[in-house]
Image (cartoon, rainbow over all chains, first blue to last red):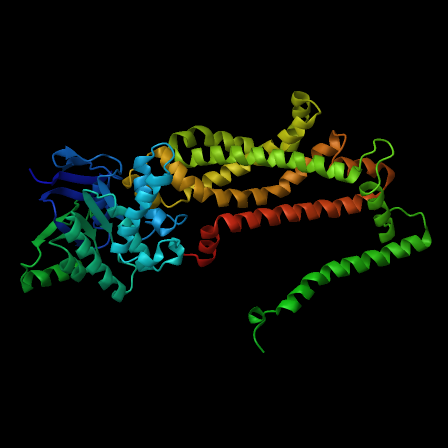
Length: 253
Length: 276
């Protein structure tokens, strides 16, 4: 049995078919990067993994069990922005998930339990390079630091799947390279299973162990919405020839 | 010469420009007052500044001959108490239902139309109903303020709750939060500074309803006093009372703003910075 089974998933809104009959398996520890033209259904796919949208047909199975139809602890997420809570300092942001799980009624810890969680959160922040910013509010942090914080906040919960929705899209190239190193290191350390949407195909190749290209195989010029996108390429990264690369490029642009 | 939109006054200049209209009003008033008094020393419409001082001294620093109380302070305390109760109750109801409507779709579907309908009722039109139902005591005055500003507060807080980015609510769920915890840790702390600014906005209406209610049925209060002395054309009492109410309103607003700045630093810097 595979870790994640995407079982003949179709997503449509009325007549508009967005994704058509996706069927594939993902193993634990894989890093799937997803590229595709705008509006091809990448985000819809990620939302289905996240639980904010439900497949119109088919199902997504996590270790044989259907995914919950609302977001829960199984899946961690980092969005392009708004991923951290503006009213909490960095360390409070990271402590939150522990406080929520240990104090169901108040969502807050005090005393020894709080100090323990505080230490754990500080270690986590240190590992993403935010040791200097524990007591800063998100608005005092740069874009890159905010994304590091969002990663730390999700990872302390040890999600079974980590979803990244263009997490570095708004960052400068230099900072983006730093973030790549961080994600690769964290993945190795925590043996994460990751799905990441990106616009940058070289980023996809560099980070992932597997690259998916979403595209429409069939287009009916009279009814452009009749057919949805599929995974047109499913490439184990590291085994790509020049020709495939070029044809992906032409498809994307 | 720079364009007009790019010219900024320095600090002393700003103060001077800001004070100028006030000085101008004072000068014009004094001129008009002197002119009338020169014609008729008993004129009551535009009393001299000396009469104001006398009136304030009589009401604020001399015990009343009838009850032995200092009327000015008695009026101020009564009015502020009614205002605080009315605004406090409204803020509590506004926060409760605003957050509930904003975060729970079923509550919103159920209550939102009612709130909109109630907010469209002119509160002054149902003031007689309040007097009939709650009597002429303190309660009906407080209830008028509550009815007047609560619908606005509920609608504003509901809107602010809906403006919290959905990403944050999703993120909280992936961190294991249930609905109650999301309200407690994500929504409430972010809505509190917005509640304070909504209360600041609603204070103007709250004063309006307070003074209206006091004018019609009360035995003390700032609004009561103004409407009482109107019978004797006592402009020397009315005008200082109006200035005093204005000052009180200003200080309340100032204090609420300071509280907000002190308690929610993240809110105000994000407000200015735009991002995050």
